[in-house]
Image (cartoon, rainbow, N blue to C red; front, side, top):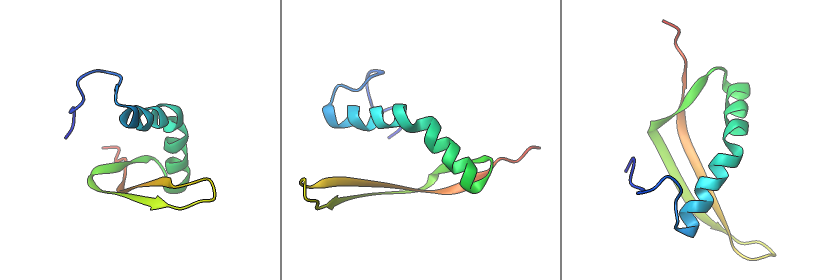
Length: 76
């Protein structure tokens, strides 16, 4: 649900880490999307999210996949 968090910075450790990843990598992710697809956005309406457990030598890891339709900007 959009806007489901009460404050600006989440206090739950898991939610905070997801928030932190977005803050650190947001401009890089945007640049990579634009490089691969052109000017536009990833839809959050036509969107799927997948979470899976991945085993590694260091212990279990979390893999989060965002799968959104690419929508090119239309300059009217």
